[in-house]
Image 1: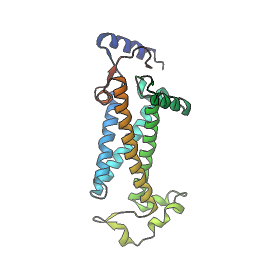
Image 2 (image 1 turned 90 degrees about the vertical axis):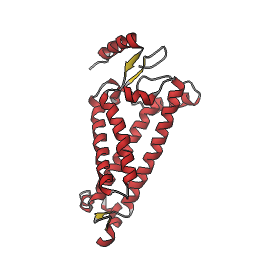
Image 3 (image 1 turned 90 degrees about the horizontal axis):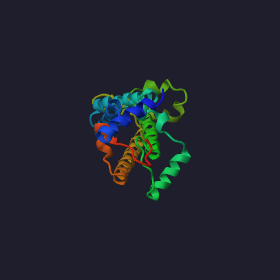
Image 4 (image 1 turned 120 degrees about the vertical axis):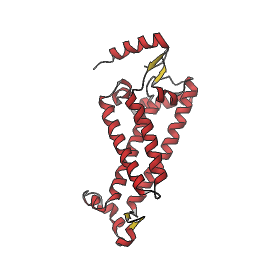
Length: 223
């Protein structure tokens, strides 16, 4: 698939409205759905376990969808379109420090690196949460028992709280909570990057993720 049809369509749209469609509806639903699901999982942790688990499964499903859509989705959704190597990412960060970074119509290299970090961290958080839900799941993984075996050392009475639901104590829970806390840090950095880019390039990137539209590329912009 080439980008020529997309470019021609964008040129026609930009000529009529001054804006172009960048984020397709599925990307937007994924983005805001993930925000809601992670916030729900965080707030429900240790309080409403069934809701916490449901939100966690929703996060896992959304991440799985994004991985697929990153391969077969629309132009600006595809990983091959926006994920850059370390050299390009560091060069972009250097340009940001000096206030001379170029505007990208889609994700810039720093934003792309953050997306990869978020997806990896979310995957790890969801996976460790899934393992914690049932002790038998850990036994399915031959490499895991040596790491998490202490989590199952307590008596059954110590592993069942909150109305009979299992609560894992020990290294596995520590890893799960550490990943969740890392997600909060990454999310804060992501929001900070969005605010900075919005200020530097004079456009509301959060609104663009709602409407799907951004200002048409100008001279020096990377479309």
